[in-house]
Image (cartoon, rainbow, N blue to C red; front, side, top):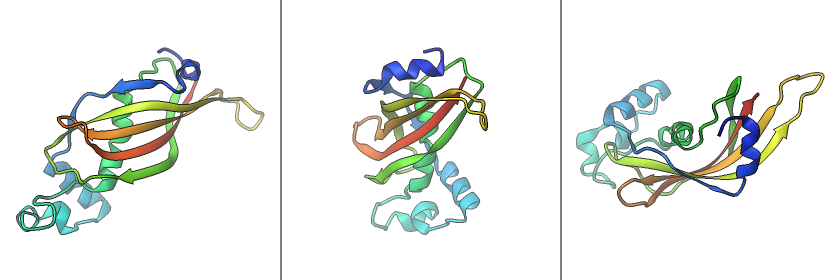
Length: 154
């Protein structure tokens, strides 16, 4: 795909799968530091061994933060001046993600609408929504589902 307008022709289509990615315990620890969420189920490896999951688990919001990166692997738009995340419509954390587990994203383009230039905002582009399923790469079991809204400006 080349331009943002090309998204208009992809509505309803399965866009494919991303490259597998791994979220490490180091990533989890860094995320905990940034967000000040040091809940032991995320950062205390020894205590988590005897906890409900048998291991530490990735913060749900760190998993969610991976969604744009996974989508970038799947959906390539090359000719645009700016791309922005516009929001989320629905998010569910289906299954805990242990650090070190390969994940991948699969996506379907749910909608796409032109952004028409106005006197207040002369930028044109496309606003789209994709349903992204983050799944365990080796099992194809769902970890997280998110409907992400994004904009590409021409």
